[in-house]
Image 1: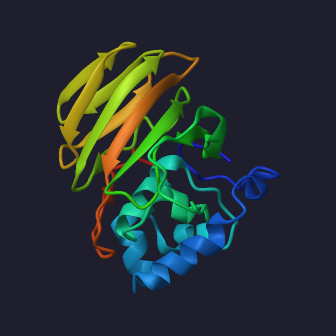
Image 2 (image 1 turned 180 degrees about the vertical axis):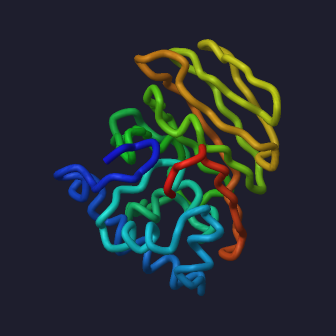
Length: 210
């Protein structure tokens, strides 16, 4: 599968990487009382594409998971079917299992069920760099390794290790790795508690199919 545009079929074994995603996506959409059409429209996807995600025919990228989590008023952890017995204040490095989605790799760096979600993210080169995101909330990121291209509105920035950014998510924004080895960053975003809260992804580049 092409992790940027998502126009091809899933790679062999892709469904095995995220076995709980497909049923969770459908169950959480229904829990939020959203139709396939309304949820897809809020996420900037076609109903057919969201249907393929819910049936396991397509593998969602990390930005798609973040979008759907906000729309459904939940977390990426719950979308993945992960459960946490208790809200431990400390997350040990040995307990941070990597999860891969659409070319991205991330590690949960905080407890589930909080008002913010904390992730350590590996952004691969060339993935999702052409998708502009606009949605309520705030985001904070800190570059650990590599260089990151960050566009906020009409202003482009290149962030080096040690640089950070904190911005209103209603500002049109997009991120991409500036180097072929990708970029490593810490990422924190606020979670919308309303299951009907909407998030807009787009526009994509001309000729792209969501």
